[in-house]
Image 1 (tube, one colour):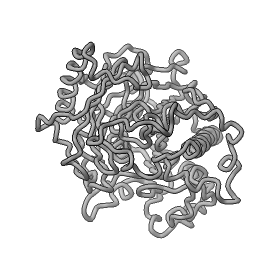
Image 2 (image 1 turned 30 degrees about the horizontal axis):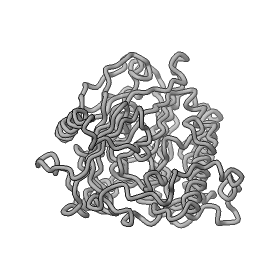
Image 3 (image 1 turned 30 degrees about the vertical axis):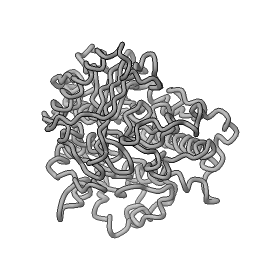
Image 4 (image 1 turned 90 degrees about the horizontal axis):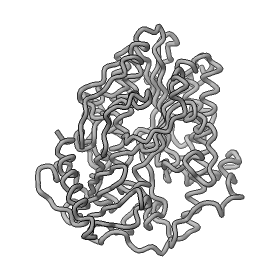
Length: 504
């Protein structure tokens, strides 16, 4: 992987620094939302007019990928601006390798707080931050922390910290909390009725200061959609939306009778979490319909949020960034779940909306290979803050401003999560090719081994090579085709080089 120095868009930074009102930041992150989940990216059913409009007024990244496509590591990478191989923060719920306070101090939220911003975090957190007696480091060091650790169900009334909400469905409840952060004078009940356990973490926003807010949904994750539409009080959206278009949802050819896609010493489908095992077409269709409803609800959230920003007079100085933590396999190759380094898992929708972006740059769909680690560097540049040298991601502003930057031409991908049947994997992805190598699970079950292929010469037990231009669905493995041996050798070498370079 080519590592380039961080490039700063000095024009925008100088404008931000000279302005009396530095831009506000709202970063919206969803969970398990695929790249192709939007109307604009080709979903045959789901309507997302507000997200489509946000992209038309901003910048959309068609080749945005997550390098560690699983909840905790993906979020840790966005906090640190680093690949997992560098920060070595895995799925802490299982592994106990929490993010240290010093690492979180370099996150975009903490750096902006020290830069005079009011900071907020709403919704799901899947990264334990702080160690020992300092486990609540995230809540203790932000101004507004309305957080549930781990998964959040569809109904927020299950959790005492959310009992001050009038709306109890996830999207609507988190919208209510967002509006309470943005406009505290109109939501005095929210603060007055907050549970005692979180009252100290809900400081009201100073309207004279810029703010940086991270909003984190657990939807459309399967753990959140199971209860959807079961209460009489639920909106029609959650009960019957898209029921008249069930025949338009795509089901992979041959499903559910697709063969196991990988050797048994690499992976066995029966080990997957139960909610990622789709036994019948009906099971898969039910999941797809509920996810489509959730994605439409999130789209409504974006539309309502933008209306609120306009109504309160801060829309013209508020940047909105929208992304998912990773994608999800929905029956492709007979698989469900994430962590696999196939396109369905790694690609995400990524939108960056900047109010005062020149018209010439609006509505562009960029094809550069960008990663989740680029988001914090972009946020910091937009806010006039220096990007730490520890960040391995790069600001996307040169792409947005069309300055033809020297950019990466390949991305290193990895999965180090070895529970729930998932294999250890590493990959190189370019615009044209993807190489994936898998390691034996014989000696690595339930272990976290970020140094394994860096410090040893461990050999993969299975390899895949796909031509993404001719085979975007990754159906034809060319690794054993002698005609492609020179390409296979090239990416074997590149993969070893990348993992060593990024670990430094």
